[in-house]
Length: 136
Image (cartoon, rainbow, N blue to C red):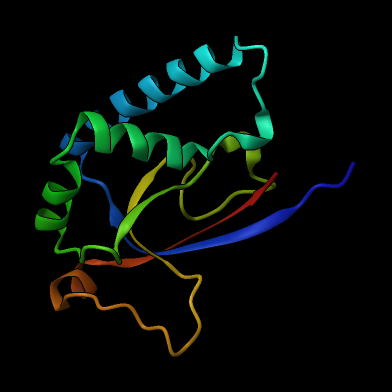
């Protein structure tokens, strides 16, 4: 059995503490909903959305103003800046500067050089690089 390793990079900043409560509630709801689906006879692990995507779906459904509030407070750009999760500690082959289990708001750097995102000057000033290595 092979293990794939990956490097992730986000230009952004941690989600403020007071907004983490909504993410935590959404994560718990997403976990409960997945547990319910796992009881179905036709449950397909490979067809399940990724953890971040499940949490995002619950945020959009149950906390409709969450992203608007996050964009306004952190000077994000709609359709460009988004939530990123740094993964579980058990999925890391070694120590990384960015901690496990953190929610970041920013731009994932899976872009080519000519694809510079449209970021506000305020966001650029507040943001920094967050990097981590994972395996899975």
